[in-house]
Image (cartoon, rainbow, N blue to C red):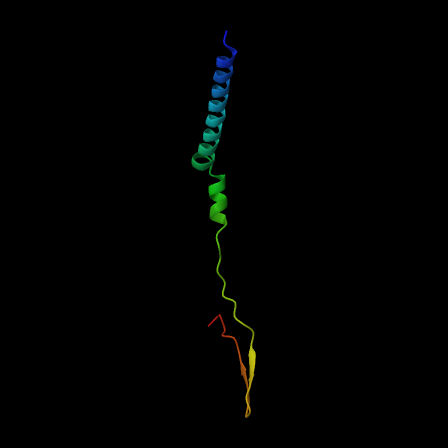
Amino acid sequence: MNTGYDRQKILRISLLVVALVIVGRLFWLQVIDSDYKDSARNNAMRYMVQYPPAAKFTTATANFSSRAPNPTT
């Protein structure tokens, strides 16, 4: 009985089983399970325009006030 050969065989089979479990789990998560796909759809970016506050300009002859544009018009 060659114990070195038996250990190599057990190690190879163990590594093959671990690799198959990992590949199977990745396949399940990416192809079959839709929970993450639904989460990705709900995690979309929403772009909002932020207008700056009103500013005051002062010159030597007059004071001006600017207003931010009205987003509803």
